[in-house]
Amino acid sequence: MADAAAPLMTRLAANTKVGYSFEREFYCSDEVFAADMEQVVGRKWTMAGHVDRVRQRGDYFLFKIGDEQIIILRENETSVRAYFNVCRHRGSLLCTEDSGHKTRLTCPYHAWTYGLDGALVAARLMPEDFAKQDNGLLACHVRVFFGLIFINLSVGEPDDFDATFGDLAPFLDFHGLEDAKIAHMASYPTTANWKLVVENFIECYHCQPAHPEFCSLHPPEALIACGAGPSSGPAEAVAAYQPVLEAWEAHAAALGRPIGTVDDGPESSHLRLLIQRTLRDGFETETEDGTAASSLMGKRLGWDQGRMHLSFTPVSHIVADNDFAILFFFTPRGPMATDVDLIWLVDGKAGDYDVGKMIWAWDATTKQDKVITEHNQAGILSSRYRPGRYSDQERRVITFQQWYLRQFGLVRAD
Image (cartoon, rainbow, N blue to C red; front, side, top):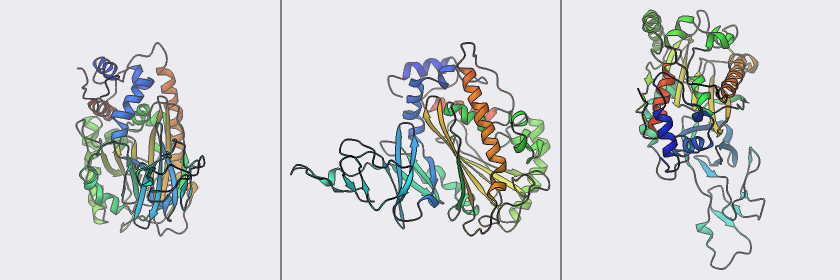
């Protein structure tokens, strides 16, 4: 951990009790946020988008994270590149629009021009000893995995991508994400620390009072037993739901779905999660009436009445139904600012699909999450805020906190 942040993070960790929420400064301090970006977020593989945004050579979009802007660019048919949005001359932004198409990248300030491969191809009136080959764009680590674009801000070599995520390949392949197309995109910028956004998303203790639409789609016993991950609820609830889950797994496997779970602990590099379970009886998918919004997605042989939640990191998630999938991006921008963006995908061969029907549940749920998380942040700013005790349905939040502190070489106090 950076020397400047070490005393603060050590003190905060020492004052944090297992089973209780974090100290106030974790959620609002400029110094803690800077440490988060350097030590946690910046060192992880973060989902930045889908290849459908850059299908044609020269297509690009900007991915903004913390103070960084990353140009995600289609170089050619086989290569997607990522560059820091910084001209090598005097640091001006190269791309000022959030997305677009370029044959070359030309700085609007002094017209330095770069090829799609990042090489500097033109710089006017420079001294004779100026070397264009030494002034190409600064690359960001990037990887495309089943159509999903990941970036990593690490200065040095990042965690090995295949070793980290390779075992997820059968699930992503089954859901047809590589050949999917974007049906809808929406943004829900949230005035709250990124950890509050994550903590809200990975527990379902709040689902019943806050999310009537979401709860209408799911068996109540499933939300209690595994609302925050595999076997995350009280033991009696897990035992009661287990026969239902096992019967569904057998049914879904017969229709081609790969069966399995991932439930990484605090010692893991990225805190991955994979859980697959049933929908409400009679529901084919997460729509208001349970009927399809699009055609079957990926390699499915039929409707199996289930859904998948996959977390690559605490800020990068997928929820996949039989007929559509949703990408969730929780991108830290400031101590109390998080970009929450959702992308709905359908099968690449889908013809007619109903966007309004498809987004009904998660658009409403995400708007509700924005409100309750912003209220949570506002309350934490009070001088009377004190860390509160977690319920039995918030166990995944405790795991997340333990994982987070381990990124700084710290552990929770008993």
